[in-house]
Image 1 (cartoon, rainbow, N blue to C red):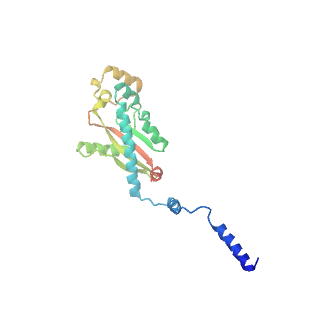
Image 2 (cartoon, one colour):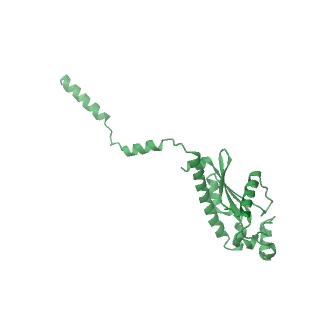
Image 3 (cartoon, rainbow, N blue to C red):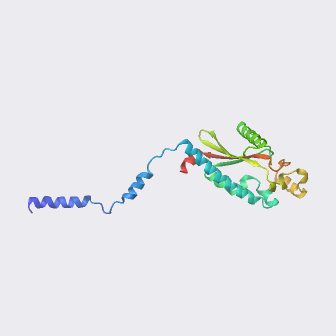
Length: 208
């Protein structure tokens, strides 16, 4: 074999070995590169997403709670928030849901200064006929808290209304279920307490 033919032969096989076995999917490569990009998320985006997530969680809790109020017996057993499926689902995602009430179901509940300030702010809003809307605040550098005021509803009067108007049978069941039930004598529309949804910022960021 002549020298020229040998060189051509080697170059041919070298070119073949460099050729990919399958065509390159350029779109897939672009998508892969995009997925590896580090996105800078602003604090305003985090706040908006936290509000969205919290509202969705609260809406689900509200539906579940309303369903639990379908009858007095069911409501008595499910008035604790731990009985709501949404609370456990949120907990598995690292989100904590609390409910502070002005009058306790069991042991008396103590408000911390932040809860006290928020409760007083909602009391002021209610007294001056201002909107009773949810709000979001920074609990600590790594956690956001979503607040929702709890107002007395008509369907809650069978357990939380005027004590003299609560049927004796329901009072007996409440006393048997809750050791320190003082959550009575509320009027419809009155501020009863606060829902508190604590979202780690890490959870919020991962939702983008």
